[in-house]
Length: 178
Image 1 (cartoon, rainbow, N blue to C red):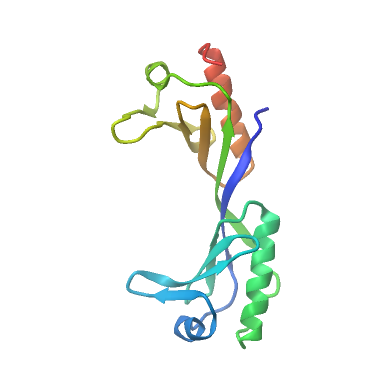
Image 2: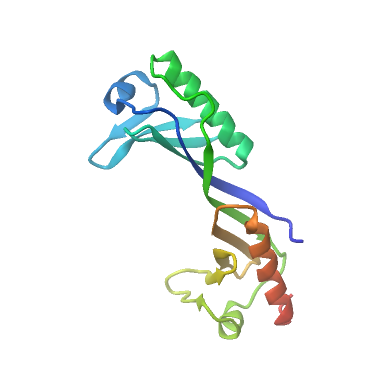
């Protein structure tokens, strides 16, 4: 099993029935609302470091937590903040993971040209992007390989992220690269 670091979790929930984003933008410090640019109120939280995007239909998307515990903490903090402002927030809304980004370092330089010619479902054009892009079907993820040995995995909604990275490292081993 490879040592995997969760870099980011994108999660969503329904925090309230509806939200008046104009009103909230006026009274929540450090919030941004520019509906022509993004039709959501953006709020930054420092602990845990997270960005929350609130929609007028009461839905919230969180970007930045590293664990589900962090996502629950931010949801609770946001609910308390909204309640203190007179908005009836749901007490324990269900939180759904939308995406997980994780990374690992195999601590070995990779010859991306060689890997690109040995694997299917890859895109590699170092003039446009310095990494090799591998699209996995099982689980459905996108894996980025860098010549430094760093691997980034994106696209799964669950703990399958470790399965995807382990399968990639096993594939590299079977090619004699690791």
